[in-house]
Image 1: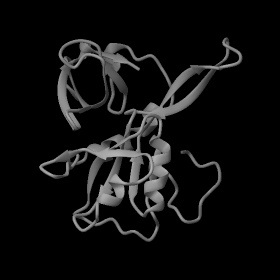
Image 2 (image 1 turned 45 degrees about the horizontal axis):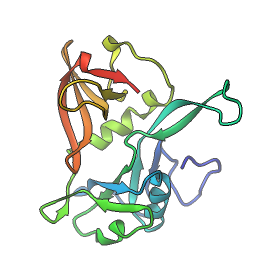
Image 3 (image 1 turned 135 degrees about the horizontal axis):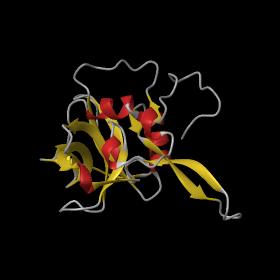
Image 4 (image 1 turned 90 degrees about the horizontal axis):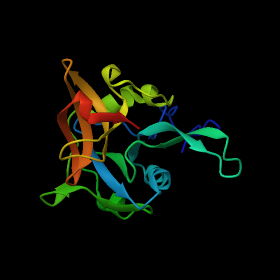
Length: 196
């Protein structure tokens, strides 16, 4: 949830929902994991984890929505970039069962009985490109930049939401997609993407 009033207990929030308690040093061995939330409970789950002392990140995307009462009016609203998922920063010593049992959390994406770590630098790239996703716009297929929200509309990964991570020349784009119980990076042709 975006704060409207400053909270003296927290560092200034990132453009998206990103929280780190002031007293919590960031360990060098810390890693990010993906928590799956209950439907439409991403912000609530993020706040609950923050209250328990965990550093969280919920990447957001600005979209245009019709007003419920006046259908001709449009509003810009911030929605989760990956609906149903958020990132939690853990160190090897942190217990992860309180994350799994936090209100709003359905599960943690696991691998071999442990929380699966997100690829090195992926969350930092998402945080660095948060500003590119705060103004809704139609993106011509040739103008993709890191941080743009997209949807794969062709191939085996059709209808999956993604975010651009890196351009691979003029014909390919590396994207991050929540897939198979984790955040996966893949390179797809530029023409397979559409703005969302």
